[in-house]
Image 1: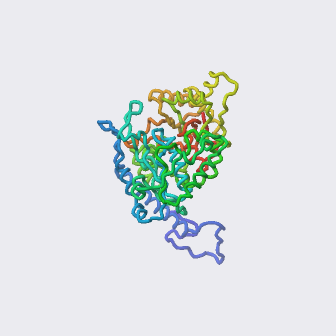
Image 2: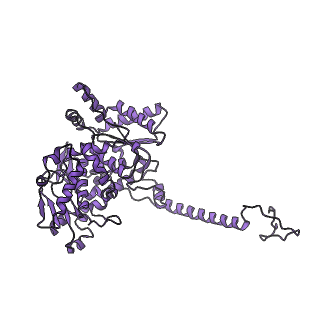
Image 3: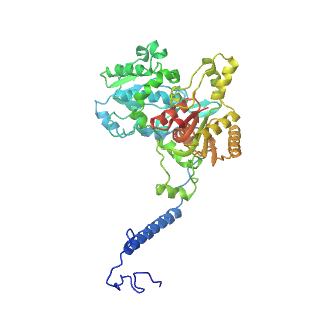
Amino acid sequence: MAFRPGKSPKSDGHVLPTTTHHAKRPRGSFSYGLTRRLLRLLVALATVLAMTTIFVLSQQPPPPPDLSIPDDRFPPLYEAFRQRERNLSHYDAYQKNSSIKYFWAAQHAHSSGWGNVMQDYLMMALLAHATGRSFVFDDYIWNANGSVYSDFDGTLVPSRIPLSALLGGPLVGGPRPPGDNTPRSVNKHFFERVCPNPTVVHVSDVNTNDMRFSDAVPVTDVFNTWVDTINAIDDPCVMLGPNGNQVFDNWVFGKKRRMLPFWPTISRSPVLTSWDWSTLVHAAYKRNRHLFKRFPHRSSRLVTLLDNLGLSGSDAPNSVIKGLMAIHVRRGDFEAHCRHLAEWDADWHAWNSFPEFIDKFEKPTNASPDRVLDTYIKHCYPDIPQIVDRVRSVRQESRPKHDLNYLYIMTNAPASWVEELKHALAEDAEKHGQKWKSVKSSQDLELTWEETFVSQGIDMFVAQRAEVIIGNGWSSLTSNAVLLRMVHGFPTDSMRFW
């Protein structure tokens, strides 16, 4: 046994002093006893960690989800979600409480892309909240003719999807955040049960032509007019007539002079701050985390270990996916839409036009029709070389603040075109000494059959949380993601555009 100063070679006790003077211990050093206790604690912690690791790794990973496509290829009908919506926990109490007030916009947006429908649902939920009424929600409806399935560009899709298959939280009946005493949302079937004879308000009786079309009338004024109209009704059951226009026409969201003054009114509303996505969207994100950041594939036992130890990172809607750049690349029918935008002299969506943003769209003036069209196409429907150049420049400009190593492409483009784009992006980055650790796209997502038809929500969840995004200024999907990023305080330099 080695001899230690101040210790007997045969004993753990202190040695009697050999002189009449006690040697002073250097100030700031640990006692031997404390060192031993610390060592024992570290050994115990290491043992617990090792045993936990062995236990977790000895377990079989969760059974893989069913990613197969049914033989008949019929889209899912989401019956479990529909049943939950019709049996929410607060319904019994609300049915017995005659003081609960409701607001049901029966003419809500439908037969359109999710981005446009989401805009309308959001505005109606804000109106319900501002008037202290329960928001009444319906399905996401692609085809309102009563059919079960519909054809979309040769693909069979559900005609209706329960809203809770896309969204979660208070908008679809979840609990309100602390301090918010507004009644919880209810499904339209519950509303029809408790409000068989509601007061019907027709949009055309309230909205004047100036409220609809005048650039001089801010959305704030329109919103306040509707708040006053609804507050003047004593009936707890209020419904907007089913055959009218939306309260806020779709084109209003492209009018920044009208929409942006509304931002201070809604930026801290619980409708937006508590916005969340469905269990389907969260499950799909969790399964595909390895596409967006450094994380093991779902089949690895390490996933179970990291999740159980709380080391996977937050998946909250307001948390940042560090290192990720997400880019929104529209294809398909959007080319024709971009040409129409040029003809209409259209500006970017309002929420894509905050004055604090780096990128701003400048319409060409005194230019030929061909020059105008070229300008719109470059920003609205860029080709592969333009996309590659833009991604490289934004990444370089972002480098002082954002270390971007993962690239995710949100797109509806054909698979062959996406692969060409991915190859071009990876090759360009390597050529410039900025190799990406990963370049993936929407088509790399591993999705269940139910998740497949709400995949736009998955892309929006990622866009909402990416460290930096490059979006399409005319896209409602980009616009909604930007809105949610602004609500949660993301840096304005993290939102870029083609």
